[in-house]
Length: 219
Image 1 (tube, rainbow, N blue to C red):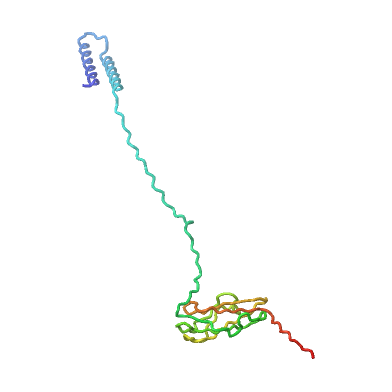
Image 2 (image 1 turned 180 degrees about the vertical axis):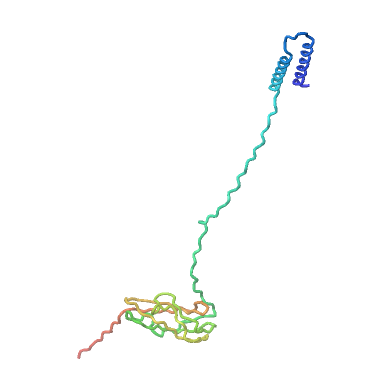
C-alpha cells in the first residue's frame, strides 16, 4: 500500500475519533464543523505535500519530422544551344554520265587585245564526251571572273548534242573601261542542276593596239 493511501486512512480514522469524542462530551468547546474544516485543510495540505514528493513521468517529445528538400529542377541553358546558320546549296558536280571536253577557241584566243568598253562575243568549240544527250535544257554557266554583258550568268544550248558530237557555245562580253588583263570562267550545267566537264576560260587584254612601224628605204 502506498504512502498516499496510508495517510488518507489515518486522516479518516482521526476524523472519526474526533467526532465520537465530541458526541461523548456534554458541552464541546470547539465547533465540530470548524474542526472538520481544519482537519480537511490539513488532509489537503498533506496530500499536496505528497504529490510534490512523488516524481512524475516526464513526457518524451515526439521526434519532429524533418522535411527533405526536393531536388532542384534542372534548367535548360539556352545560351549553350548552338544556333545553326543556313548555307546556300552548292552546285553539285556531275556524274560520269555527263562530260564535256574543250576543243578550241574559235574567237578571241587568250590574251587577245580588246579596246575598252567594247562589246565582243567569245566562242568555244566543245565536245560531248559523256553518255547522255545534251538537250536545250543544258547550259553554259558562269563560275567566276568577269560576268557576261548585262550581267549574264548562263547561256542555254541552241540544239541537242548527242554523245561524241561537238557544238559551239558563245557568251557576249563587254570589256571594262580600264586597261588591264581580265578573265572569265565557265562550265557546262545539266538539267538536273549538276556542273560537269572541263572549264572554259576567256582571257583578254584591254587596251589600244599599237600599229607596227614601217621602215621606209631611201633611194
